[in-house]
Picture 1: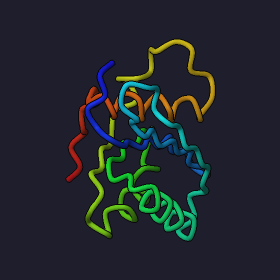
Picture 2: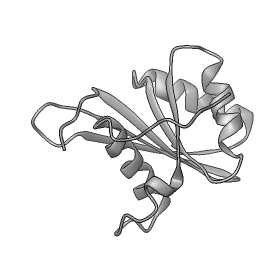
Picture 3: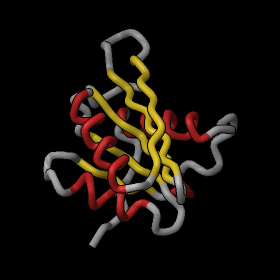
Picture 4: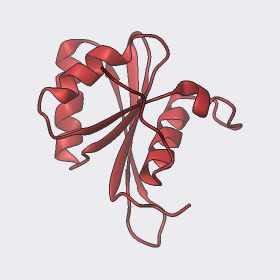
Length: 123
């Protein structure tokens, strides 16, 4: 797949935890992978925001079933410079071989860095 973004982050959000994966496009080689886990407490969400900023990753795609994405979206949206995408879990649900949340986060980032995800409407 051709990568169109320089950096992309995929977030797999659950009730108590967030798995994050940043892919950094290095040109013709495989992208560099940076992973981190966070809780859904506000202090840790601010740490997530700082982690993304420190890695200069402004393109963020998040997958969540239910409403767990809302607080994450709100904390990242506060600063105003992230390009946030809430994506439908059904678009990625049928992909075989992804058994862990870390793999889910990397898969989301992989699809996002290639421009293959559609944003959901966020009012």
